[in-house]
Length: 294
Image 1 (tube, rainbow, N blue to C red):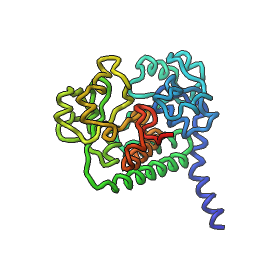
Image 2 (cartoon, helix red, strand yellow):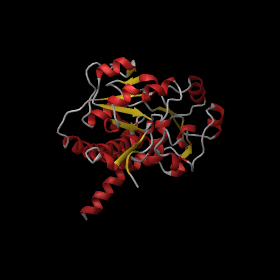
Image 3 (cartoon, rainbow, N blue to C red):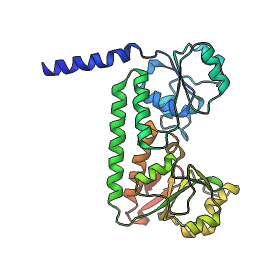
Image 4 (cartoon, one colour):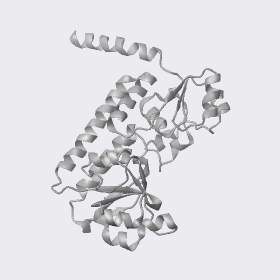
């Protein structure tokens, strides 16, 4: 009887959300794509952004292939007959105005830069889609991934600092999502790093700032242009051998939701393996991180 009453209460709690759930959802935004694929029913998804199928940017790229993609025009979006369109902060204003003129509901999916905002966003989108229980499950998965990374970080006896460097010397600041990830991993930025969301740092400044770990986002293997030269400079190579580098795929650094969960577990795996003998490991820059030979 108790189970029956509990199930009945749950049904009445979620029934209004299910009744009002959108039937044809369109996503104009990379981060919204991933939340929709993870939280919505397949038959709710009318179309995703062109970025949804890009494995370099999206952690749900393979699952996204079963859904149509947009061509960015408001006209084609309207033709899909959506009852909810998810947009990002930088999506086209003209498109938003046209959708509004046709009374199509629009929801903004903001960029998240910390764990608290990511948790709130998951719950909000799940409720919006009529699946609050899936949002709660994803938040639990996020918290579990944080716990796994915290355990790995706690096992390290020596405090370390890290900076995230992109092509051309752009360095992520403490307010960026990727820096939040590294702080969760026990790798805060060193004194002298850029403030806010980040900024460009000269090679000389990097060498003076000297973080313990260099985190490289999709680093190239060869210096094919000036931006790539920053990664392959002899001074950087000498100061940061492979046991002092982490190759971090870009798809783990852009969005909350499922991407954030995978990013936390990726860092857990990298850091837990970093205590193993170096001869038994090799980095694959920008792709899969640390993997065993063979």
